[in-house]
Length: 188
Figure 1: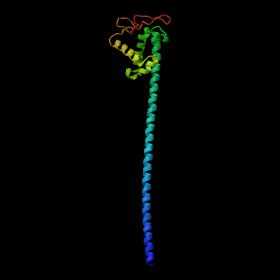
Figure 2: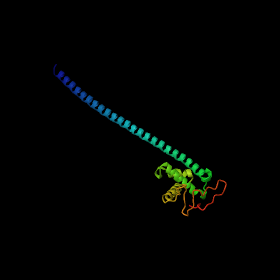
Figure 3: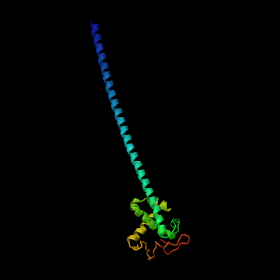
């Protein structure tokens, strides 16, 4: 084997080394690609789990909110019926926009808010919609009754509200549904 055989071996060795280097580079690139793909898939999977957890929390919050609104409506219906019955009125008379019924509605608002757990637990806008009023009107009614109760404006024997001029405003509207309701306590 002469010179040609040595050259051939040398050339084969160079090609083999070059091929080995190319294969090694290709294998390294494949490993990098696999690592990137794995990291991407792991990130995507983690993101899906986060989104699923956020969705679950949102669904739970919506269910909780729906339960709270349902409880508010049930409490509203119950308290309005009790207040109307206690004063000899129909629910429609109590809920009428008559100014003569304003104090009784305010007393009902106070009871609803109290039964729901206090002012922080009630959505004023929702309560206003139930009463057919603005949220500020309902809020004012609650705080007016609360202020009167705190200042001793409630007769402890009957639980009725006493106005500034010592008029029993909780019975001022007990005129019956067919009569016209006018009273000295009509103005807030």
